[in-house]
Image (cartoon, rainbow, N blue to C red; front, top):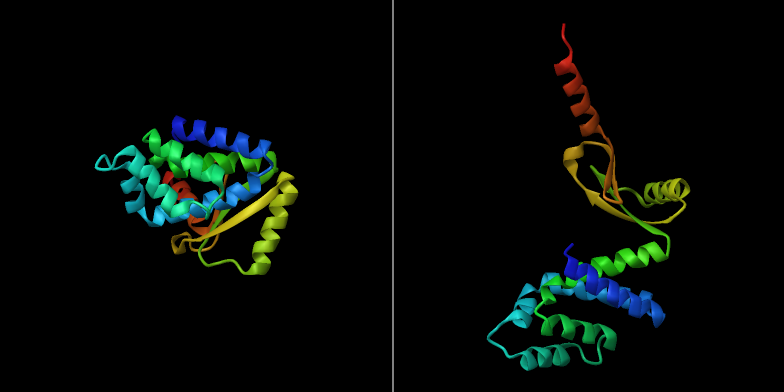
Length: 179
């Protein structure tokens, strides 16, 4: 994440927390971030030097006025005016990070060979909540190459419990063994 995204995301979170709108803004920001990711041409339009600044701002007004929280619309306008609208998703990540910290939430991605059943997902979440003392926001990702087991990704760390990792470790140890 860039310093620009961190600075702007922090500023927006501070405002949202002060106005007691952090949860509402987070939901809208994440939905908008997803929409902008799926429609990169819209961001290109907002960055286009072919349009004057006031025209780019008018595009935002026509697209979002009355449909999103005014703080978010104004935030997008500031990013557009400053030529940093491309940092929007990074701003949202920083906002989410601050929200999670303030609400004792830990985001965890469980990578498995097949999707976890709802029961296993609930058990894993409960186990992680017991270990961390935090509310776990569990995301799942399927990667057949890990063969079995689970790899947990959290706080920039990775906890490897996959069969592939265990086999790779065994293979490495065997290759290092002198007979």
